[in-house]
View 1 (tube, one colour):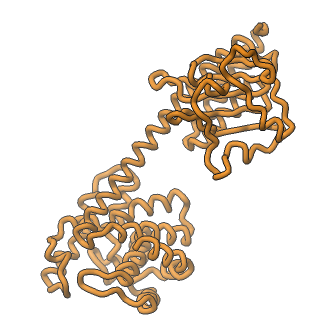
View 2 (view 1 turned 45 degrees about the vertical axis):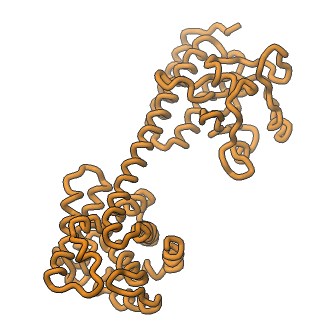
View 3 (view 1 turned 30 degrees about the vertical axis):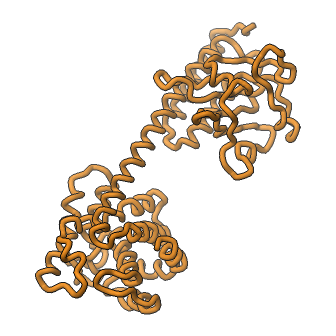
Length: 385
């Protein structure tokens, strides 16, 4: 039987759920979002423990375990460090709820009726000393996608398992399911967008070097340099993706110039240098931060610290930092790898050039960062050959 509640208790519960909804809706990181969902769902019933599992094909992935009384750091991971997975069927309580799509209240999981299809796995209790006395399992229902997972509340307070709280918990689960699906969709779109950018960068390199490995080496090396220079994680990721577009303007350069086996003449060199402006033109006009950064890099990664570069002859810190970073990564990669017009340089010769061009071609701080993390950059060279 559900407990009766007062109007004061109802008001307090509704205020709690409103605050919880605001807290959860503000979260953009899916991992933290899932943790918050479980934390607030437990608080509705003042429960010491709980879990959240999501449907993944024929399995349930447990993405979060929480327990105020024991250490749960290893519970949600298998021996390989992956998310704990169980078959999606009626044999477990979470699986049954995800399959049936109905809320389930189990008052004594250790003494289940033989008529129910699900069993209780008490292995965690046995290992930890925790005692599971009751379970409230709620399906995560999306309005159009259906059931996407199950939320389990462990040992909810009996007096808090009443009609209002159960109704709120169901609504809470729907809101959470909608947010999770939206996050997944946004992440899927983001990945597709970044993949498209990378492939556009590859297209230019296929014309030039018949390989996308150069792009990979530039991306990872630039990210390492950005980290060494103190850029934030977000800025490092932006640099990683935007640097793939540094030579996109080469799609507008004739193949005869790109693949010429020998030194370019004066007219050919003018056409080759135009790839910076061509690349910027391709990328110009977007409101997205990555494409804005890509435009900066494409336009200015051949500028020189002393002002003798192209296309605009910028000097020193007039050159955007991202372009200064990619300049070092790009030149080093060009030196130590074979190109149609040159053999690969010996490593020490390439390092000497980078060092000698400090304060001339290259930003001195970027050069210092390069040598500070040289071992990592050399690992990237080896990995992406």
